[in-house]
Length: 362
Image 1 (tube, rainbow, N blue to C red):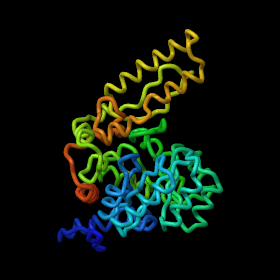
Image 2: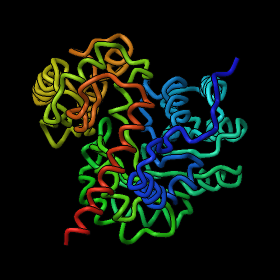
Image 3: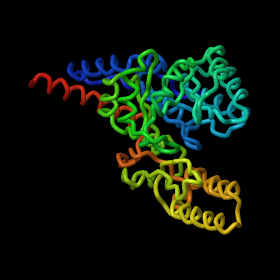
Image 4: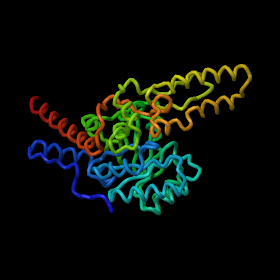
């Protein structure tokens, strides 16, 4: 039996206060381009997080009025098809699927999404090819891509993507080098033809409003949803988020420029310390001739293999990879997805009311 599907707006203001109602209407106008594009009540996307953004969390975000996004990661086509079907059994509302552009079966994964009627495909982990973008659009779905730089944003628009996510270095997981505050200034004034969603370090509704007023169509959040009651992450994983401060979420350190380390933001733990020691030992072995440069690079790259699952599913938050954005410092308790979205909306409404008050005082 399907869960209850109430198609009224789950985040509609219940207050009879005319000022709050007016502020909520203003908010709806600010993110109207985003809600139209996503087909949602609020323009809040869930970040695609491996092992976390599965059917339960994705459907919870969509049922609460936002836009859930399944993380395909390394899934094979058959498994992705099953996960999409399972999500569709939990929600009738729109959700998307995040595909990694470097996946060896990307074309087959795209076909799985199209065959299942997925309306939005998010392409991540690299610059998508023109043929992949066209295949998705020809199949009737919308394409969302990530742009960590203005030059790439312009290129993706020319390639025909339907929307962009600009993600700052404050985000959790794999990150680029530029903060959201800078990216927003570089991109939002100039990309107006398609919706642009902001991501990275966002944890409050008033912050979201500030980007909407700069021209953003909505916002993507991951870290707050990862610690929600609807997340299947291990309780120790969630408790690590609740304990953490913003400064605890750091990017992985590279000891030698000859051996690049992909920047990943997560909570510093014993695994982080062991990675530093592992790099130092690998560098010593390379310099002594025990390892070739290629062998040393692979040795460093393979260190974290399986570590995200260890943290998220097994709860080994000391040795696993506890990916988290700097917004982790804003998490003080475990809330449901619906509570988080309601809180974000109320904070946004409060910010707009304060803004109106300031204008009237001037």
